[in-house]
Image 1 (cartoon, rainbow, N blue to C red):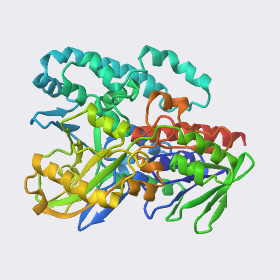
Image 2 (image 1 turned 120 degrees about the vertical axis):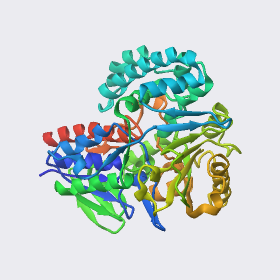
Image 3 (image 1 turned 90 degrees about the horizontal axis):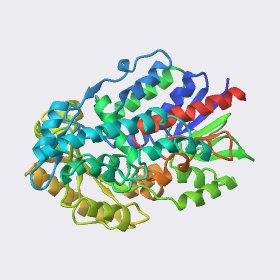
Image 4 (image 1 turned 90 degrees about the vertical axis):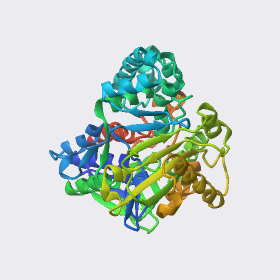
Length: 494
């Protein structure tokens, strides 16, 4: 029986491992941290459950497919709950917009801001459907290993004006500025600047409209636990709390992995769901390919990091929906500060996550679980002392949530902690503390991302946010489908 190693038990790594094991490849997942999940890690404190993220589940069928491969049902292992509205957007002047796939309600929300944009929205929806078909259905699970493969997709990309930004394309159809923000902010959830991310990412709107937005009961961590349970059920092996120290090679072949504990195994194929730079620069330091790729990756644009405040409060808040975006006074200017200037601005926009309104099990009875997330520049642009800055920024973020939603927030807090770019770097070996790997700009998409199979080490594979198609649960699960197809074909040939 062929044997494969998958480094990293995040969504991408587990999805790949399930696909390989389902196809009869004896697969071992090696995870550095004390729990599986990668960026979907979690903490339990004072009776509260805090998910590290991601918190938005779209296209649940891409997950259910992992169970169907071995004639099992995902519903036996995890319950998904639909979230409505998807997001409530809130501006400083008190304007709100409930983002949903309930068409009559959505039309009413659009009319509330600008009735004249209803017709433009219909045109935008048609555009989103077109790029969804090309960018997700046709190409989202296909590896781009050569420039020729990229050129085959070029006519469709040109037709859909992929060189334009999401914000630019939204603005072509929508005139109201608040609606432009409402229909373009989604790229931030995968690390992209709406002002520069390829318009192909407008497909997210269609993805959400058709598939909905979901929550895993018990937290995203329970979805990870369900994937691990299913993987082990079909014969897979998970090794937790033992970081890989090296991907071992002989010439242009990976031979196995060695961990920090000294454990070593030989494998027919090795895949990494770890950070791209860490995988090449550190895990392949003994192979010239590692240094070569690290030099190339250092020249690329990396997504920003995040500052997240997790907090549990006394009381329940049925009026605060599961997902909110609290827009600050600036949109483009704030994005420029984060993506271009590398400064920590005085103002910010907040993604507020309130899972206990959907799932009371996330908090003790009569209490609520929240996190407030603020995008910040990565460590390469903003090399500050996050131990000192974090305390100040935490207070500012909580003050803002209090000002706009929970006036006595500080007296209600039962427990709190924050997570910084330095934590992304230390806990996840994330290059520059980036939260989403490479930025999803056109010149870093498809063929221009790390390839699902390494160009020189023929049995080394990449899965996760750094390869095609990119970040987000559907993205990394899609990358697993593309990578598994390559691995299974290669392993069958021997």
